[in-house]
Length: 126
Image (tube, rainbow, N blue to C red; front, side, top):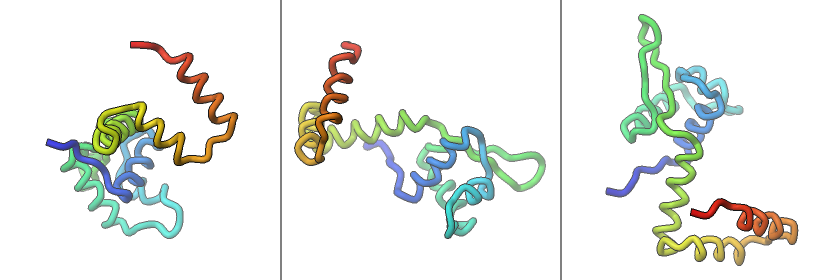
């Protein structure tokens, strides 16, 4: 089965949770949005869907009806998951093809190229 991904709206919520670095209720998340902020119910719906997809967990906060939400994976883990999916889906699993695509499509400066070469030369080999 294909790994679930997040919609653009869900990613906005996840970015806020990742940046907050703590469990948060819907109102906490809403306050972190720039104006115009989405409706409370919109954020609550995103969180419900994200919980069903397995990206967040919720816990009751105290004795009231409020829940707090926490990410179940790091931003880095999600990034890796998405890039791996793009690599496999569009580039036949080839990192070389993926990198070649960006090298050809993006306008890289000589400084960018030098940084990339340095990263490749200094990476740990498996």
